Image 1 (tube, one colour):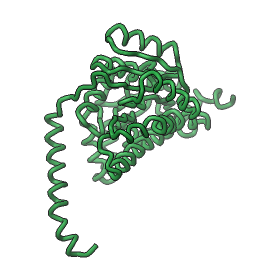
Image 2 (image 1 turned 135 degrees about the horizontal axis):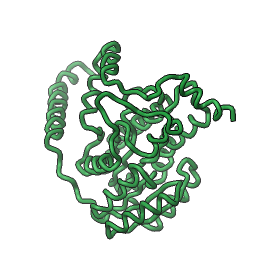
Image 3 (image 1 turned 135 degrees about the vertical axis):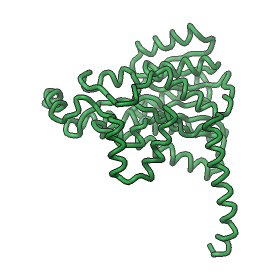
Length: 318
C-alpha cells in the first residue's frame, strides 16, 4: 500500500474510530431498547441449575421457546417445571453429556426435530475446582477444558452453520472475568475461560469478514456467581472472598445476560464496571496491576497451597 493511499484513508479511519468510541460511551449510559424474541427458539446448556435455570426463566418470560440441556435430568426437570408454571411457551428437556461430540450430534438432531433451527444458542455449562496448580489432577484439567471450552466447539459445530446460512442468530458464550484476568487457585479455569473469550473474538472477526452481520457472537464475563459450582469449591472448604465485590446472584446475572443480548451488546460485563478494569489492565504496568489486585483483595480462602494440598491428598492418591 502506497503512502498516498494510506494518507487518503487516515481521515476515514479516524472518523470511524472516534464515532464508535463516542457511540459506545453513549450506549454505556443509554442502552438500546430490548428487541422482541417472542416465538424464538433458545437452547441453553447447563440449564439444570444456577445461571442456566434462571436464563430459561428469563427467555421464556419474554416469549421464547426453550430447549434445556443438562447432564443431570432430575435438576433439568425441575427447571422445566418452573418455566412451564410461569410461562406459556414450549419447553423441552434433553439429557446430554456435551463433552461427547457424538452425543452432541444426536442432541442437535433431536432439537431440530422438536424446534427446527434454533435462533439463540447459549453455551452456559461450566465447572470450577478452585485448586492450586500443584493440586490439580489430570482428570480435573481435562474435565475443565471439556466442559468449559471444548463443549462450546461441539455445540457451535452443530448449530452455527444454519445461522450462517440464513444470516440470522445469536450465540452467547458464557466466559468469566477470569477469562480476562488471572485469578489464583484457578489456573485451569482461567485457561478455559480465556479460551472462551478467544473463541468469541475469533468468531466475531470470521463472521465480519464473511459479511455475515446477522449472526451475533456475545461473550459474557461476570465475576464469580453464587451457585452450587462456587459453593462446592474443594468440597466446600474453599470460599471466594473480596474486599469490595460480593458474589453475584444467579438471577441477576441471567437477567443482565438476556438484557445485554437483546440490546446488541457484544461483550457483557457483570457488573458493567468490569470493562473499566480491563482497560486499566491493558495500560497499567505490572507493578501497578499488582497494587490494584492487593487493594481489591480477590482471593480464595484458605489461600495456601499446603491447606488445599492436605484436603486433596486422598483424592490424588486414588
